[in-house]
Length: 291
Ligand code: SD4
Image (cartoon, rainbow, N blue to C red; front, side, top):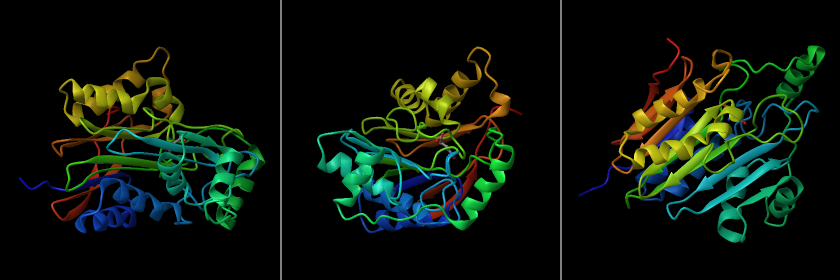
């Protein structure tokens, strides 16, 4: 039977989902689809949570986190990288061309430069201005879906029936220097098991890390839960942690299984994701916990 190719991506980035769709329509792999999709947002200076134009840390440095997983369960990531826009491609290179899984900071940048990646100033005028405004009060208070949204995480199912995923971000705006989020960490921001499915997260990374959210979702799907049920359970783990102040932060998950079923769930309202399926692309408003 013919496999329906699918791509999903966090939030509403038409260019990203269209790029992933293009790859799948041309018979390309799920890995190529998610990487091409993520690259669109990395190159978009208007997206202040990914790639060029990302909001900097407290010291004014833009540092990027990204990872990929393929259908073989291979994983590659880069964390805290400066001056390189396409960290998703760099993460893929770590996966495919090194004996390692994660490269950090200067080492990752050095690896990029020796492999032909371009060194660029990632701090745009708009993001610099936002940081200067923030510095006046220097109040560190992540605001739900305002300051922190727009990380892109993507999952795809290709014509061969293989699933891959990718996630790329500049992390939380005005984070402490050296802070690494969930997005590049296997099992937290992203997890793929080609026998079962994949999951990807966006929102307050610390909470995703503490509950190993994406791995949890994939394991729940392995046990028979639908992607929707698994995403809901992973959000419930976060909100039911002792003394959880979940009313003050957002976490969102999307998931895809081998059958091509999709699910999503968030703590707060206003999360949406894009889906390409049966040749069509649409934006889907996610169900959420806090009603
Ligand atoms: C992080 N999860 O670094 C990322 C932020 C994010 O949309 O998803 N923003 O914690």
